[in-house]
Image 1: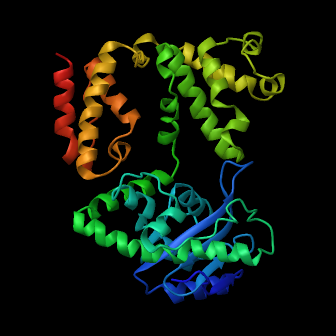
Image 2: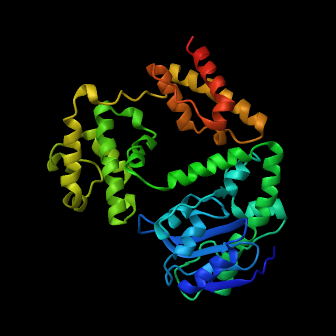
Image 3: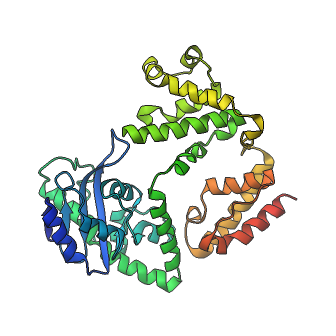
Length: 375
């Protein structure tokens, strides 16, 4: 590893295929992307970087489309390394139209080796190698051409150190018996990359104030967010540009039945009503027509003593296990997952206990904690 790696610029299909052939026999390939995402739903790829122990290949996606050889490299073959991969995976899904597999996300790997759940790349490299990487191009405009020497070096360094970092991470994970955990978590990341109607249908659950709505208001908000996700993707605009969450929530609260009532929703501009009003009112009307028995149960308030007691009991289980493993509690279960367990318990529903390695470590303790807290 060096702070001045060999760099090869790729802007033709033939050069990309030649680079793929050069690294095809490698066991591990490091990947990264630079992209622009200020006025689109889909990330606009500006640069694709990869390395396998030799030169750093920098692909210009403005000049060269993804080739079949690169698709095969992404979807098959060697292990791919990425750091904080969620948006990079979206770039590859949109540009290359294939999933990246098999995959290891070095940020995920690090979260299972210590108490920092979202360690940045520079800190990760410093932690494992002692090297200090430059930060001067963090906010660069990667769509401009030609890229400066500083930008090229910065982009190359984003991949060349991943290989050495992973070699040390892997040794630690194997020593702790956690390699299967990383593999499972990274496979889940790949599975989540493809946005589907099922994923769109879960967006409404992210709202922290959902419990303040009635079942019919929740149904309206659910339908509004599903529509917004599909339209933002189809039009390729940021979801907040189409209709921000706070306005969808406000519409669901008020359940307007005509344009006059829609116009009374605070901060809903006339231009937005003119452009999207028919769809917004249609979705509200559909929610109003749903039979009572078909509506979801009323969201539970997290402020009640019963809810708080159960949540505290679950946190104690997770915190104890996290301390024993030397990881952050949120690596084991996120607050939303804990709240879902509490809600299911209070509603008498089947508990959505974690599966996989988390289930092995936590499921029994979580169920017991809920049973004890209910007494």
